[in-house]
Length: 397
Image (tube, rainbow, N blue to C red; front, side, top):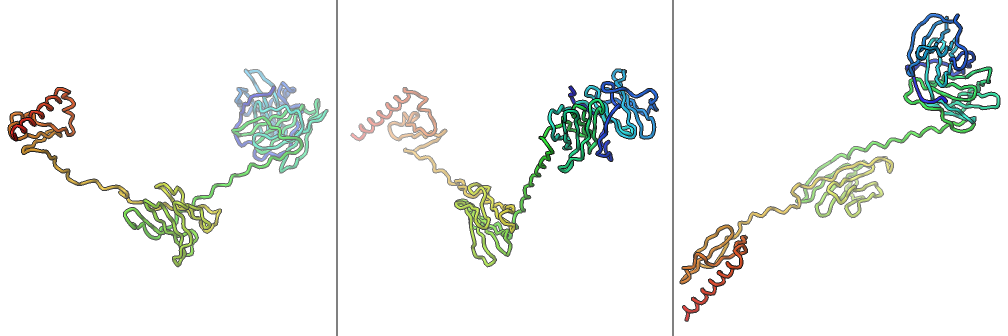
């Protein structure tokens, strides 16, 4: 089988070649026919090494007459001659085309063994039509939906037919096998069957580019502060004619846009609760966010792109409560002498309990000293309080 792609020569070698088919008879590699005779050796003009490692020697035999002989590991695999017209050779799936001015096209693979007549598409988009009959097979190029005329290969008489069209070099064997090489093409592929008869693929529709966004409308005045958390500005209307749009941004009520005519008459409006779009093409995008923007159609109508303007920004400190500057009231207690330590207040009582003043009565502030003291400390404090009450009662008695 003729498989696997191997490309060889440089690009743009087909310029100026006609679209006429070339019938190859006794010009072939050794696998397909006899090599050239010794008398046609000619003058060696260059030696090329193809991508698959094949070495090709090109000889000039005369005007518009060249011969190319291929070698693999030093052994000849045959030769082809182009005398006044190109010639093609096939050595077990290794194709080579020699032109009458000495140029070479060589590739391996890109081969299809068709089993049915019909249209085939090559990797560059070129279309050819194959006609398979019992005794012969023909091929023709398709141009703008019309065939340019068949050329047939007859087994035992004509070995192969090949075309040079645009950037494609097409070879058809006697059994209808097709192979094609796209000169200079990054994409190489086996001919693709499209269907019976002449099939003209529909061109791939060119996607319509998205319209460019319209620039924002011109700001006529503002932004102007109407209060601590309300800002407004005036922009041009996309409808022209002196119409304007008043954009208002309010912390509590949100964004609002009012369309006015040249005399100041209100025509339409959109706001957070009713963001549009309206009949005149007004709408608010992201109406419940801090990045709301106003859109309006231009004079182009519904198909025209929207003009977008951001609503004026609120002040940065809008809605914030001012920080408290009040001086905290001093701590208060009972008794004549007071002192503060780490959030605790010690009260020194009067009278006969002065001797126990170093213990006193402890009021807990932000500290947790009493809790840390445990149950014993709580009992001592309770005992001292009871003793104090008894002494005061005795003194009154």
